[in-house]
Amino acid sequence: MFPKFRQGFSQDASGKLDIVRIDTGVKSLNELFSSFSGASFGRGLYRIVRARDLSVWNDRITLGFPAFAGRITCFGYDWLGRTFAVDTERTEEGEPGVVMFEPGTGEALEVPANVRTFHEMELDEYRDAALASNFHATWLANGGAEPAYDQCIGYNVPLFLGGKDGEENLELTDLEVYWHISAQLIAKARGLPPGTRINVNGA
Image 1 (tube, rainbow, N blue to C red):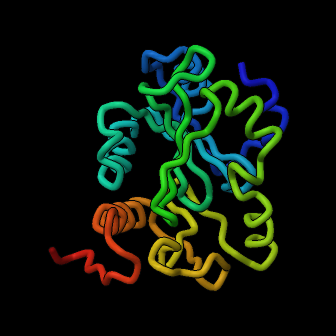
Image 2 (cartoon, rainbow, N blue to C red):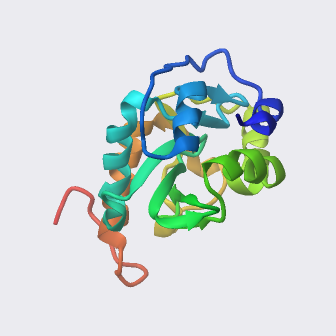
């Protein structure tokens, strides 16, 4: 399965496969994990979540997006830490639809695809829109670091708090810490008027 994805994305040597049998209840998602669990592609551009880390990922995302608790299964993430999951409350061609969670903007965006069409069509035809691949190439060309499995290139100041969408506002960071802080900020910022000061450690 996923022939176009296999052809269009070169697998990184650093992406250690962690192949295990798992039943998510979604056939294409099971096949994705059985083929690519833990794999990295395009010098850290895109990664598949390790199947054994699913519960950690799902909890990580729903901390900032509680409305999705109990209905998503994360499967991948890009170099900016943006995470892709399937949502059981939305259907695309007979399977759960894909949603992208952005820690930098604090948004959850519906992708008009399921797991199969996301990898076979969206990433093939709209790679830059889905993964910011041109920005990634510029980042690497300018000496930016290639993130490992537990890292991402995160915004020092999130865009939803007025941070700039440029290299000067990016740094290599621990993925778990980045998402934990971002999720708290997203939850606190939800519904507040622009300009409100937020203290991630306070009430």
